[in-house]
Image (cartoon, rainbow, N blue to C red; front, side, top):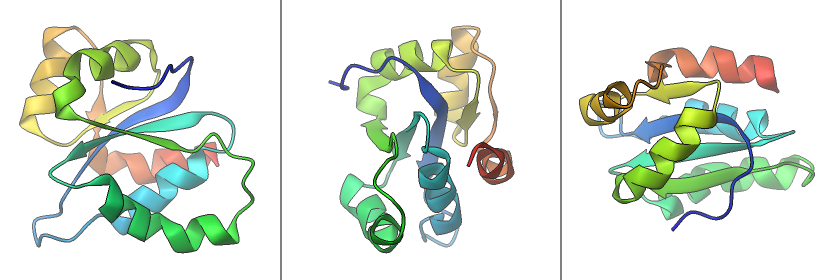
Length: 122
């Protein structure tokens, strides 16, 4: 179950790159963008611990006055879709998540475009 979420700056699906690596720059952009409001990361085949390892050095450098990132996975799809329906920025990378969003009429952008958009929120 997701924590109570009033508003998020963005919902971002994060999965492995074709080479199996994590999209570290994208994950860091999401954290930087969480200054005013949280960013919901929908994890696709990655764990919160893996994301934490990417973020730990960044978190120690930046101030703690951030909304932060919230982790969810596809097992919480009803809750994730509820949050996505209220968010003005939703980014999807997998066909599964795109289909779920489309079936509910929730507009989304390709996750490949998220890094630039999130940088503007910082």
